[in-house]
Image (cartoon, rainbow, N blue to C red; front, side, top):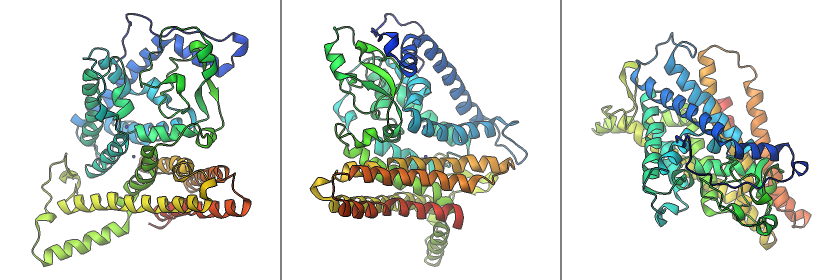
Length: 470
């Protein structure tokens, strides 16, 4: 496995036209409440920002915890558990179930970015920043770099990665966009993952285009993530902040079937989404979660080190890299050599690419078997989103488990939890593939789904190795 909003805006930007009370459900009224009470959301965001800055910055200047430190009596241990044991798994679960509510209501980086943007130069977003490949590259970069510096284990790398991302977000906001979250929309390392998981969220803001067009004009919605709300058909880019709820009597918070968006032909998949799914979340992220427990990595490292020693090439065995480039904690006996760094890069990028390519070939084979009547490669690939959600939660929960083990808490429930979660993701993916291939004759449909099922089976084999073999 990532601003300070104005306390008193100069003017009200959003004009709400709430639907009559008897036409609203509880969710619609909740959405309207979020639109009306921006002051409460701003206060909440300020609190989250202050807590975030405290937990990221302070532990980096404290001594490293010893074996007697616990979550309840050591700030560094508490911060590690809060960020990596609770925060990231919780955010992923919330995004897959509630949409991007973390982004719109809580995220300190997004809030700081918006706050800074209201005070910045307000320049238009350049074309290069809108390139669809940035979410994947940013995700790969932070994932790989985080493993090289052991971001999950030590506070200084955490400050460097998390704090560096926040500084970059504020810097971008001070230059581009007037009161908008330009960083969040185009450059945030977690944006691609959030956009994918939000596709299966049963909670979303539904837009009635006919009602929108029929309503009298008014002021535009102040949409911080730059979403064209009038034409919004996907929950991927929506930050679920509620500002647009009730606008033109056409936008309302509502339930939907979790498979609806992926089956909806009106929301064409983008190549960036597919590549992030296959090679980012299911590829490199999976490799990042399991390389440290892999006996294959250890065996390759030993053989390469022996060859280097035998041939007099000892420079790669040096452990003099700075801590901000490779893990360097000699007091704890945790030091990466240059060889470690190269092998980790090879394992994550090479292994992730191989796994992503294998999944892509399986989906491509199923799409080809379906023929012209099928949904095509890109849409069929999106059927793997439930599997990706389960996989990323499984991987992040490994951090949670490591903290719980350190506190000697009982974990007898863990194997059943892991099997159940993966089964839900794999079953959801296969069910989506079955629904997407509905137009096909039954024999061809069954054959295509059977081939597609090889994808969750392949990923299941990887996780089985991690949890029950290694």
